[in-house]
Image 1 (cartoon, rainbow, N blue to C red):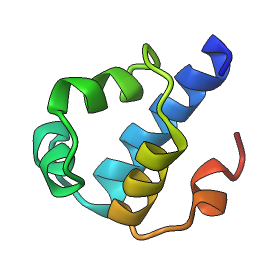
Image 2 (image 1 turned 30 degrees about the vertical axis):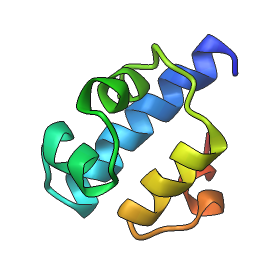
Image 3 (image 1 turned 45 degrees about the vertical axis):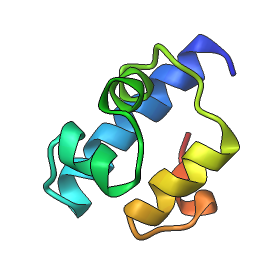
Length: 72
């Protein structure tokens, strides 16, 4: 995944997490059974998440993968 896309996705994930769940990174990561530092690195655009992790994130946000990537 290119770095620009990773950063845009990270920004989108942060916004969606706050809007849809109101949870902190730590609590959201716990909800989706992910390590907080790993999840934080995805939001910061420093780590390219696997499709499996993106699926867990989408489910945790109550949306589909298609909706997650819409507009990127």
